Length: 70
Image (tube, rainbow, N blue to C red):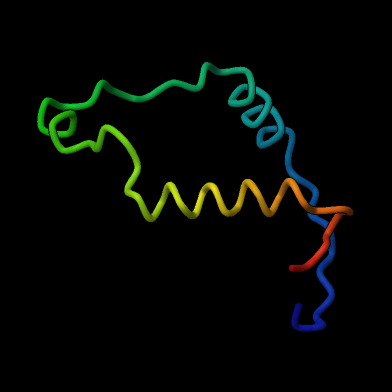
């Protein structure tokens, strides 16, 4: 942080009501993918992505405590 102090905000009743309504709303896609999007979507991750995922999963499994740095 830059050292500036920030005071907490007090959301209005309307804001709190809108947030509560949104939290209870179903979270679904706004539409189905188009046929073009379906064709272009990869069936599996790239080898680089898969290797990175595996590395991060193994690193996470070895963490001994919260916030440990590599």
